[in-house]
Figure: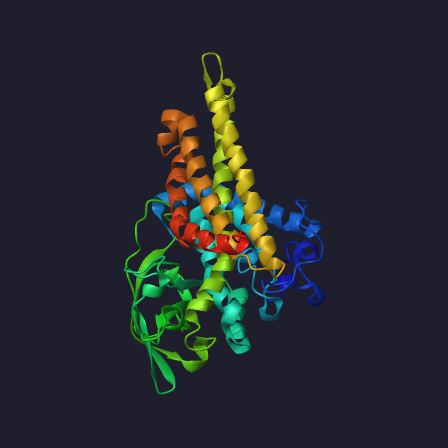
Length: 416
């Protein structure tokens, strides 16, 4: 399906000619950064915003309560082009830049971060293929994602290896013309519905950790894949998260991404794409918390006046607004850097750290402003509070992000 056909609801805004296609690895248009959106970007933002407010917000609480996987929402998002937005045009996608993808992610997260995570998990699984997949692999696996509403999963985290990716124990051994994978992955989003998995496995345990792993594309219906139960998490409850066990799962040689030993490098490059998108999701939640708190503070009265007129409340709202704007600006810088062909690891980690903390703090302040009502599930901020915490945990904890940031500082600020 072509980019123009995907976005048939807004073909002028979202379709791209081949001469103007831009994916993550290509350069952004010349010129300095700007906070003014182009007509195309504004159109993309409006489409995602309208979808979030009309199709996600009204059903978010129900999906949270039932913990049902949001297939209907995913299918609708696919039909209007809000799924797989970073897939290059050559493989049937619209080939949007990271900046545009971040805007979409923020708007979807405003509606519900559980639903946004289910949608964004596709981007996480697809990123390693975009970074290192062969043309044939991209056509086979990225192409199908644009043709029908399918989901994929990113299999890196294990019961004993989270942010410490180098400690994974899943093994892949070459046997004849196939690789055989054995091991267990944990907290794998979309795994119960995945058409295929990106799997990181050790192929040379004796090598340095950064050269000991290989990335594979594994079909979801491969014999030997065992799915665990859906995990019941504190928040984002409609997102499907499970343990996945691989028992003698055979993978053809052509499904190796890059070459054996490249897996760690590929996974890290993928994070440069996906961490700004996770950060933008955190901004979306923080923005929602701010708006819900503002609305309540202007309606709720104590001592004869709306509570927003009390300085204690007004200052909390001011802090919430400051942090949303600062977090969004940092997300935009991280995305802009990637689209411009610059190294963005430093800014991606900074964006995720700040936006994640903003999501948690804004949700906390929103509950405080609502008072006792904020502790009740009939009001929206209770869900925001539960949903926010995961942003400081997945895609690398905030402590790991600070470690990455600190390791860049010496080269940025050398001792003269």
